[in-house]
Length: 169
Ligand SMILES: CC(C)(COP(=O)(O)OP(=O)(O)OC[C@H]1O[C@@H](n2cnc3c(N)ncnc32)[C@H](O)[C@@H]1OP(=O)(O)O)[C@@H](O)C(=O)NCCC(=O)NCCS
Image 1 (cartoon, protein in one colour):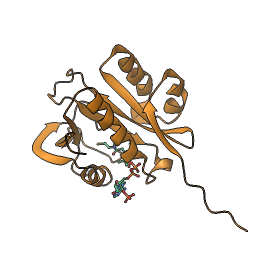
Image 2 (cartoon, helix red, strand yellow):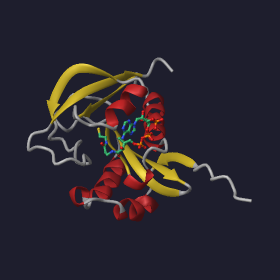
Image 3 (cartoon, helix red, strand yellow):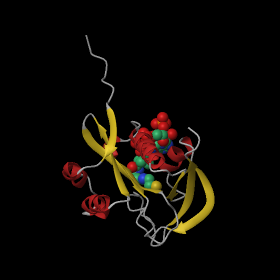
């Protein structure tokens, strides 16, 4: 008798230094060395690295940035959402985003902002499905939030700003 396929176990939590090897092993040419700097910023405060695990293996990350230091007035900002290619469409991106929102609520925030390039075919349906809406504002995306984008990109990418109220569940 063939066994039914096992449902993957998804877990989300704040990253620790022990996650660094797995994060580094999945860096791309564009993000080489970045995982260590994200964890350093987390240690400095106001910057939270949420990791997602599938069956115990780190398979993605997203960051909640509450420090207004990158020239954009979006606080708090969700940035650098990235699910490793082999782990996509299993619900991890949505689960990590929800973990980040809960964290923002616990920190006392009533909204979350993010920037996304208008041609991102995966992220936009994800955000819309989770209740984010475009504010109508745009920004030049030179703050590195598009480094995980997988297209060719341009020298001066523009992001649309989205917002979600955390007051409604
Ligand atoms: C965007 C990204 C994080 C989505 O992660 P994921 O774990 O695959 O997403 P989920 O499995 O949680 O998907 C939740 C919902 O989002 C939407 N979605 C996700 N990927 C999609 C795709 N490729 N096309 C259309 N809709 C998509 C769907 O509505 C999906 O629900 P469904 O699977 O029940 O249809 C992932 O594709 C990724 O890392 N992309 C590269 C980096 C990036 O673009 N990050 C965002 C920067 S703003």
